[in-house]
Length: 352
Image (cartoon, rainbow, N blue to C red; front, side):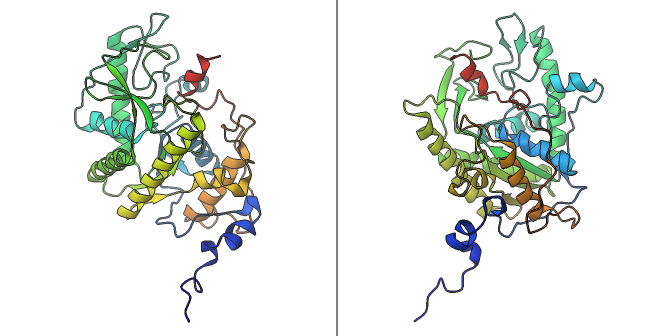
């Protein structure tokens, strides 16, 4: 008799690759599709968790590519105005639809209907990155001018990066009924005003996410034939759900859709890979060790573990790669909640 499981690898068996491995040594990466060296220009975009990745990339010594860096400003002003949080100052791109519409605006002349939202203090914000400029803008024209500059940087991110790391965060979003534009926050949360005739809630399905990512990747590759993409799924739960159900149930739905979409995409494109930071942080092997007391924020131990696995498997420079026995990476300064820019937090702030 033959047994098809007799010849499988240890990493295919739970007991050998999970249960018998110390938590800090667990590494679920198998057969990465490409390697990165210290000259590879790595760009990031996506949800709040992507900021942890960008911080660690810089700390380790990789080339974190930031075309929109506010280099003419003093460092404290750069930090205050959210330069360097991502490769361009696009704020949180929680959904695949946001990523696609940003590309279409940067390269295909897409003109969103809503140009600016008014804050309570009389200042204006960009509806598609409403918290990127803490002081807001004095006029609508100022919002438009700043966006033009921003889109130039976005074009550089997409055309000049060697690797784009995109972290999928949410399936829930709010969009315009007029032109279908998706916002990172519902109108009225930090600026603007919600209008049922103009705005609607949407919870993207698997087919939606798959189609949006596929469209984006094909367009990106035409602009940048050498680019590689590394997809991740944010392990950070939803801070709120608009569905009439418990937020944990909505979190499970959202992360499941995003994880399956990432799997479908990576099986379709040879130059797109999936990095399992989601599994490293949320897996039962960790026992909740990698979350703060609120069960939502990922702590420095979790980030460090994910980045050890990243360097071990994706760094081509032997000097940069981590010993198989689990050498600990030098940790970046512990980010505070204020250091991690998360548009979603604004929802919770209005429900004290």
